[in-house]
Length: 140
Image (cartoon, rainbow, N blue to C red):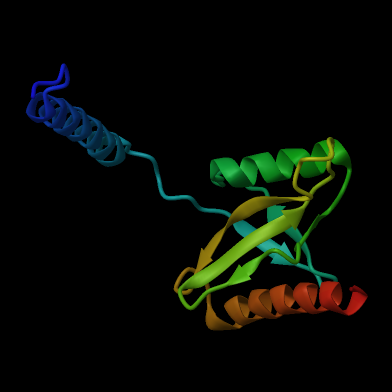
């Protein structure tokens, strides 16, 4: 029985397309000579994050977007209860104003990995995330 689809040719085309795509992604990742992301943040006792502006500060795209959203909405960057604690680092989410019913009420600020700051600062951020999660659980 013959079919109009040649399985060997289909597999070969799929494999070549996958290899081209993977090669392009690898080349893009390795050829991007971006400087490491460096920025300093301060944390208040209420869990409000402020990015310390400096001429040398470079922010990742997510942090730029979170800061721009906070400035445009006139809200502070308060740690949101969806922030996560992992053994390798902290995923920081900050509050944002929803413009439509289907939007999230938080945006991703960035990752703080375990070795990127001193242990005291890392633990303080972790406690702020735990406090934000507890405050939300106590309201529900």
